[in-house]
Amino acid sequence: MDNPCDGRRATGDGRRATGDGRRATGDGRRATGDVLFAARSANALHRLLDVLPVFAGDARIRRLFTLVPGSVFDVDALAAIERVHARTIPWDEACGRPFDLILAASPKGDLGLLHGDRVLLPHGAGFNKTIRGEGSGDSASGLDPAYVLPGGRPVSTLYALAHPSQVARLAAVSPLAARQSAVVGDPTLERLLASRSHRDRYRAALGTGGRKLIVLTSTWGPESLLARRPTLPAELAARLPHDRYQAALVVHPNERSRTGALDLAERLAPALDAGLILAGPYEEWAAVLVAADAVITDHGSTALYAAALDRTVIAAYDGGDELIPGSPMAELLDHSPRLARPDSLEAAVEAALDSAVDSALGAHRPGATRAFADTAFAEQGRALRRLREEVYGLLGLDPPTAPATARLLPPPAPSARVPAAFAVRVHISGTEVRVERYPAHSDAPAHHLAAEHGTASERHAQSAGLLYRRAERPGDAPHRVVRTVAGWTADILDSYPGCRTASVILSASSLCVVRTRSGALLTVRISPCRETDRIVHADPAAVLSAVHAWLAARPGPPAAETDAETDAAAAAAAINCRIGGRLFPVRLSAATPDEAELTV
Image (cartoon, rainbow, N blue to C red):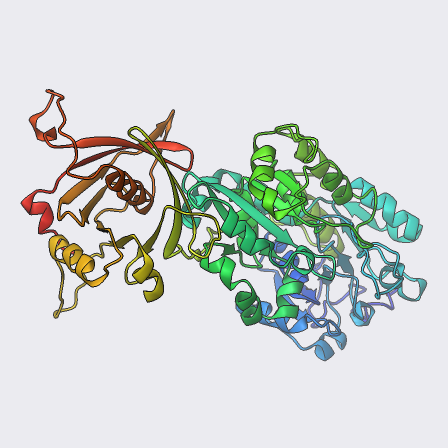
């Protein structure tokens, strides 16, 4: 007897035809299959895109996408579908024809109007929140009977869940729906786990270097981090020393859609100007989590992915009605160190990263966060294989012979703005100079302002004690004008009376030339910091601040070196620059005529 829900008739020989009139094979299995990806929001679409490897390489499958109407976030969903160049069909057309399989990542919307077997996947890591004003009001989003059981009937043929505990929670809503469920794991987590070995690649793309990457994550709604603590991104970027930390922000796609890309960027402008990275809503956020050292989070489930990667998690949720007690996310936050006040930001981060026990912050031990993720994610490393087994069973097709493999996350696109001006704190002890740089607008007391000429504003250039520029590679233009190092540094000191030191960074990591008010032209050679099997390079601009302060504290030319090992070290001085907690040996010497004639 035909299933009245899918609207398809059997063919004359008893075999069921496919949605477009194609016949099944002689043994009753379909020869082809139309798979519809039904997305209601950008977030749901991103979840469905992570499922694509289940069908990879299968020419029998035709992949179609439609936008489920009714969401205030649907504009961004449509734009996201267009960005991946998917074949789309209008909702009215989708409702008017049958499909061999329908995949959705949200039970909301009129999914019951679609004809065919429906597979429902979670649109986040577990079911941790209630959304006030929607559905039943007191049910977990994704398990609300108003959506899961419209009219008392399950909306889905198969509930593809990530953990056995979710089956139990679904059974409390509907035993019938629970009987139609299967634990397959989380396809999005598969991508993060598969990409772990690319951590160094992602950090290089982000420009992290030897710094610690601290990631803020904000869900959407009135209890989100950005709603409750809108200034925290700027405070994070301004209060953490630039050469020790890098900051990034992951924003829920719904919040991006509600706010708008332009408005969001303008609200975050002070933080972005201070170097904050705003991760993209698809794939890039996951690569940033892989690259992260620690995550500061509200009650959004993104932090559970960080926990699965065993990243340090710091709680910044101020409580409310949305987080469900006893859920995996609630348990993770209950057992994570807490960020109480912005002025304790660096202390909280350091305490968490160092696994220190503090009565105000709580305790954290390496490896502890993964245990909370294990309560939300089962079948780790096997999710795509498990999901393929289930969906091909519904399709009545033999699955492809090649394994379903999670696609590696692409490296993040370089987007961080290097601040053009810094307020610099300095501490000198003998030949060791410790430097900490903060954004120029920081209200902390500083030794001097350092600004990159040609990039910083003229206001900062006029106020800077140290002005520097980074040498550019010669272009191919036939009409070019270049400046010598000697000429440019002399001109800067003439043009900016408040400047005490002018400098050119000649290489990305090791060679600079400086000129002081005394007229001396000096070469600065920077050695990297060696840490067992790692070689860490400093930003030369930070070293220049150390040299600037050291020269100001020791008027006159550098002291002569008496080391007899080399005559080339005559009239040289050596100092150690402590930057970001690391020591970088630096040698100063009189610039040679050839070095003075180098061009910028």
